[in-house]
Image (cartoon, rainbow, N blue to C red; front, top):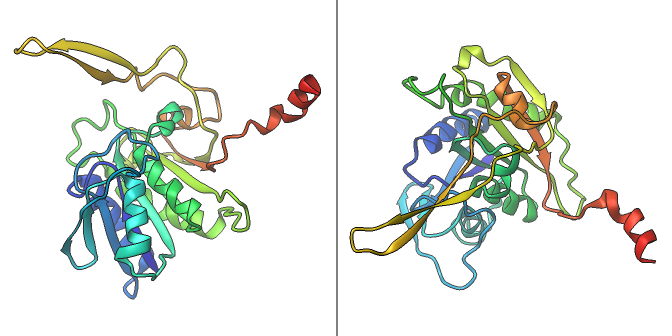
Length: 262
């Protein structure tokens, strides 16, 4: 199996090293692991592509490349340049440092890479490690993902629904809970949750030179979401597996809206 891995935390992120180990187990001794990841951190860029300027791609080693672009850029660079037409069998994106559950999924560069792979017709899975008080003092904060990642990816590959003939192909969003590996209770198929009463915001600061800057800030991450949703499962100690697609249409509203608008 030929696997392409990317992330949004950057080519030197420890989560990418964890993902490399997972990918190696999935690919097997005869497989190939290709890495094309951002040269610098690209957290929060979503499905951004560098449409208005070129990107530099540098080879760092055998099958290992850094691109000055977003995770979606990295997937495009891999598919149409680095791999020279040798299409991968699977794209894995992550392991993100922090959760990409609930509304975080909408901002996530980790998911942006997986989404671009799906739009290009390649099976894709995004993986993220929820962090919290129980992971703070671990020697390896990615312990849960590292221990259970291979099993989860294999389960999705073997039993998942991929809808290969759909216009918008499915991809999967996996979040590992904020607990040590031994405390993971299993996995659950979930919906995307929503954290109520918390939003992204800005925090103004004035620099020593007197210039005013704004830092983007997130809200509390350990708020419960609806039962059966991703963050709720994570906070209960379960790995969440959420099928997603890039189609943003509110299909449930179409009949009613047609009746209203004639």
